[in-house]
Length: 449
Ligand code: MV4
Image: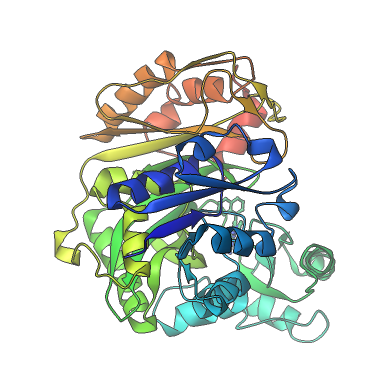
């Protein structure tokens, strides 16, 4: 096992990793920018190192500074959290070159899944169902029109280097295709430096359902069920829940089994998330994330598996803590991402938290690094904290969530709490009857607050 882990992140996820390290008896090193000198992860770690000025590129993304911090403190492993360097294959390789362990998947798998075309080819080869589309990149002039006609309109033009919805354009008919191709390609070129695009059948009202997987790197792999992340705004997840309100145990076992088998075949190491669009009872692979995700607590609450602890144990060469038949989905969990934003305009609202009272009670979990008097800096994401609620059934979970939201106090800044207090009282949400465009349509019609 590792002796000392350097946590190359900030905020709630740095704290989350610290907690796992504490339970395993591993010493911790926090790194921070000058803007985060008073942050909770710095206070709770055994040691801390300042790695640069506020902008992420000069601090949390500063690889030489992180290597120096490892050298100074004698850390033997690095946990990247999410965002920042978590899906940077080069970073994983550089750490290895310095005899440091990267707590995450193999660099080759991070790189493979970072290329959306290669990821999709790999998924198909491994037996994962994919969205019908071009087999690879399409060139604007030659094959695009023929392929689009074969797929059938509407088609979606996607950037090979994309993700997060950038460089995506819908073509509703053959007339739209030329413009969609050039717009998506130009956007991709300027955003990612790679103009290549591919085509997919456009799914109109799917749900976003993702399967959590865990692999030991030697051919052992299991799945931990799904999270339904359909409630998003501008590709930012707002509310995540598991199990999905629309999946049967049979559908879960089928798609979960396919994902676990695929991870066994590629000898995947660590935690991963296989993202699908789900429409009319069918799953369609869109991408795979090779990091611990923001919404991982949903899975932890319904499986009682500590995913960060598993990450650390697996990275140190350990075994998975459970076999597939030992995994059961217990009850229901919902996560609300409470952001420091205006609940109507979503404009960031950094500043001092003058009053803070987190909710508690049975089935209520808060993953947050804020405290009363803490100043949310303007340089990073606007997450105040995640409220995660568990119940035996979805109805009980919603009942507890309503109560917890009413109890929670965050004053001095604007937060998205009023949005969640409205959502838990919406019939479509109570019925679990929503899709990936529901939230934006709801916000266009009746903004809460
Ligand atoms: C799609 C799609 C419809 N059809 N692919 C958006 C981000 C990227 N990761 C995948 N995305 C989508 N891909 C096909 N073939 C619709 C979306 C999409 C979306 C997906 C998940 C969650 C929210 C979304 C919001 C808008 C569009």
